[in-house]
Image (cartoon, rainbow, N blue to C red; front, side, top):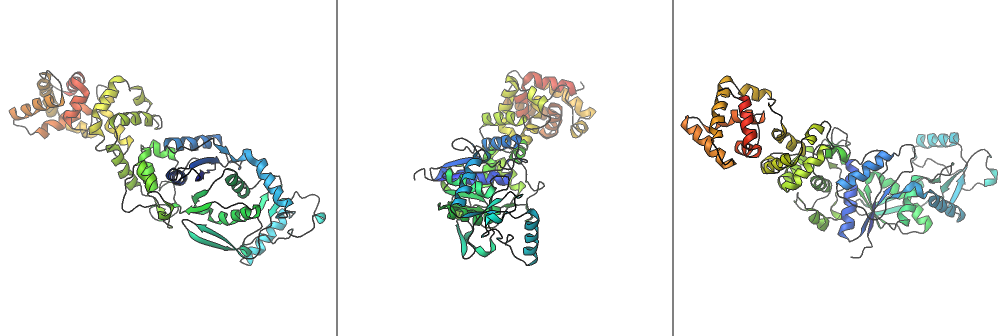
Length: 474
């Protein structure tokens, strides 16, 4: 296909890039990639009071971390206000819009009356055909769309199907406020048209907006983009997604130790399916993605499923890449500066050596960091309560004997230390487990760790013997 497909992701910078927004960006990105098109990024910063630079940075950083690159320059909606005003004036000149001089009190009374009568059309059209010469001098008019009052507005939605609104229930939409500022509805339509957007893929909370926006497209004689309104993400219990369920910023998932590839894979399966396939490489996602397989029901967020998927990605990740991710995540996790300071050529090499064992059990990078703690621990080790309890006077004596046995190992390796420990256990009629558990406590300060021979191999001869000496009584 040609590059005629143009999608867009258009977040409001009033907060972080939340998980629902990330999924919308992903769906837009995948659709554009599949069709050899472009995904544009537009920051909808017309709400000047609530839009912040910090939020813009968080959105851009979140997309970069998820590796969802956009095409071209970032477009800032507020900077295009003059163009939005120009379109409103054009509609006015063509008789497709009119000036409304209704006061705030009049509008409030209209809304109240309409609600009392159970009508969804809140504005009664009082200035639709009135002579502007009769306008009060002290009211700054809004510009309203002269919307059709009969018939239907129809959207052929690629996800929701055919959606129909009766025009008698839709208001004459405000295009330009009394202060001359364009409304969100107008700005979105003008921007999508000017940016050449062919496919609008967004949350189904925008579905009612589609009806209003189509009326602006029709008034301007512009072609309506293909519309796809995807269901929102709910909590596991079916209620609106809250922070408890996972309604967090993408940066929070990064700090919790999730991998971008795992989060992308999890998000693509929230509301979209491809047979029974759960695990997708980026290439497979692009090849398989289609809007017809997006469900109409709200997707349910499940942390346990995300964690299991993340564990899969960690186990299958390249060890060197994991060392880099381990290092990167430290910048996003509070209180890890001390560990960051201990990263050097030696500890990085130890981490790389330990990675095959560490990654087998970790479901997040945070679990990986915790499991790697033994590499960075200072001597004498701080023992956790279980390790403390295990290192009884009797076991401390055993540690002293193990120190002597391991001291005789000349060429230090996992295999050589294993042979020495097995021989020691046999000579002393001990089970290997009775030797390994106290040894683990003395070497790592904990009762769980990677295999004990791997720990000895990673720590090396000098550090291992030093730690055993610290905890032994001979």
